[in-house]
Figure 1 (cartoon, rainbow, N blue to C red):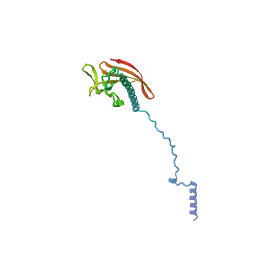
Figure 2: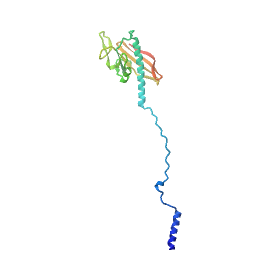
Figure 3: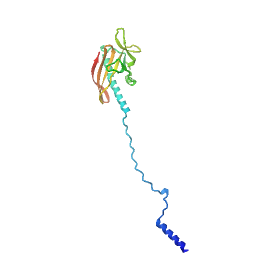
Length: 203
């Protein structure tokens, strides 16, 4: 009887010396360290090529409109003196050849829309044509009605800086009634203003 008791005591002492090697329950595991959360950065918009091109295009149409309205006002102020006979329509287009108001490319509708309600009405160049009257004088008329009209040719914009530019505008009303002027412009308080002009040619 003493031997089994002695054997049991020896086994108990061995287990006590080794400690409890049973696995730790899963629900008692110590959580591992979590990485520190980084602040979320909101990306700032970067101007794209499309955005820059759209802004440039807007500036260019602003420049064209500023000059054309200046010229329209000048013509209207000189109709009474017969320096510019009355035209029933203004035919607007881009010059395909420098200093040529007789071979024009139609402008986009967005530019024409800027002159809605203008008097005389502004139409695209293809709606007008140079013809002959009974006096053998070539003149510009509206194709659909033969009413007297006037071509306005828009040249290429020359950028002098981000806020300065120049542009030549040509006109053609009839044979030997044609000319061109280079206008200087500057952006002031966000708007383009005509600051000067130079008559470049006339016939």
